[in-house]
Image 1 (cartoon, rainbow, N blue to C red):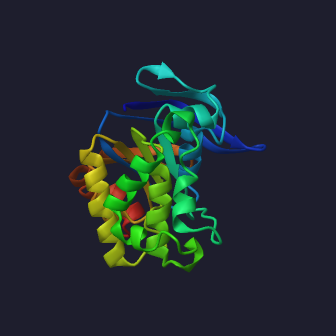
Image 2 (cartoon, rainbow, N blue to C red):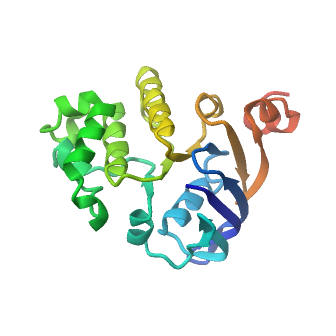
Length: 236
């Protein structure tokens, strides 16, 4: 699924969190939104899924503007968000948490097929399917959150800080699974503060600074940009 965000502005109450963000991604691409904490990256993701309304600009996919769609319709059309912090129900089982993502009517008939797909991608979740999600490690909980998004059979997956609180070995395992998901044709947009971790997965990235896109390019283009290195890598 292709995505186009043009001149996006978003406000939280009377505070403008995003001023002017524009970027595009083609169907099947792996793209990063990079930048410091508080730059507006998560707000952009929330606007794409419909949590935050756009006060200016447009959000389009497959050539059609989707600004007015409620969240449920965006999910039904193939967009799914893995939120920062995971937002699981700790007392519910792993399987129950995953099934919570299957609320669009179009996917309820395929719930068993969806579960099989998630358990194929994350075999450890099948072993722990009947355990409370709150008993899992941070990395395993992140797998549950990704599985909850995948059970809706998205064509575009939004990942907000997917490696926060995840051990490096598990993060590498998750990246390998995301590569599999990408090869299945799912477009992936990833918010990440760890520049090197992001570039171990995405093909190119946009850098958000103070609610605006400050730079864009491939891994090599950005890492060889002195201004980018000074601001975001601490290199002089």
